[in-house]
Amino acid sequence: MIMNLEQIVNQVIILAKEAGKFIQTERQNFDPSAIEFKGHSSNLVSYVDKETEKKLVTGLKLILPEAGYITEEGTVAQHQTEEYCWLIDPLDGTTNFLHNIPIYCTSIGLMKGSEVVAGVVFDMNRNECFYAWKDGGAWCNGNRINSSRPKNISQCIIATGFPSHDSVKYDAYLNVLKGFMKDSHGLRRCGSAAIDMCWVAAGRFDAYFEYNINSYDIAAGCIILLEAGGQITDFNGLNDYVFGRNIIASCGIIQNDMLNIVQKYWV
Ligand code: LIP
Image (cartoon, rainbow, N blue to C red; front, side):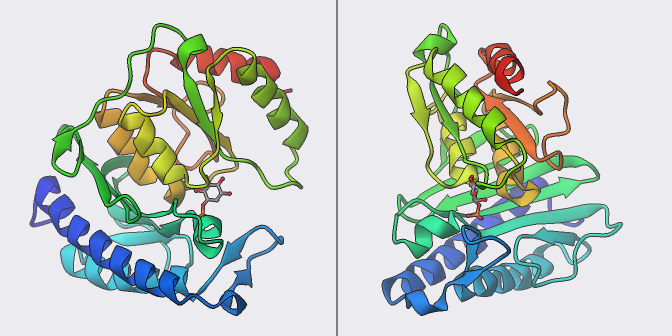
């Protein structure tokens, strides 16, 4: 690696904003007949996801030629043994995009070994670019961001994502939702995990949790939240949250409260 992490992040921000321009241009004239289905009926995708991913990969190869890739749309050979690996969700919030709901973003994370060391999330509807690199702090449009400091979970807003209807833990998830409804200022479901994670980092949400989530959805958000002072675990309170498919991310102060509620009702 020739550039340092800050220099890499600055280059990735340029790519993410170029991707945002493409996505917004395609949104203006999007033809619903271009919607495709991946697996079940609520897992949607379109050429916009795929073409954005190809553009990002082309640019990232110039930044870090030796890196591997884990991408949502699989338009490039997937990660094997490379030391560095990009985790890319080219259009996080695809369903929102396809329904013209303006809550979607481009998310690009960089792992070194098993640690996420840099991340960029560009929310093209609010023109907010969140970014971080290891030990470099968390930022939004050049301003430092920090996670919230609530007194207790009863004063908190909790974000989440809904599992697909045929998830094996569907009823357990609904039990957890009820648990949070009893002891918070409420729940929010935006439809983009990457934006959820960045809004916890910015102190807008106090926590976020989701089951059956993918590494590329949350990788960039993880480093951004950790650098903003947040805390992240899996549903067991351990560190297998990037690839473990379940995540509890918070401002830190309420991490144990989050874990206790999830573990109490996740039955
Ligand atoms: C989405 C996630 C969201 C989750 C959705 C979907 P996509 O990613 O960001 O949190 O609840 O089911 O997986 O598919 O829009 O890239």
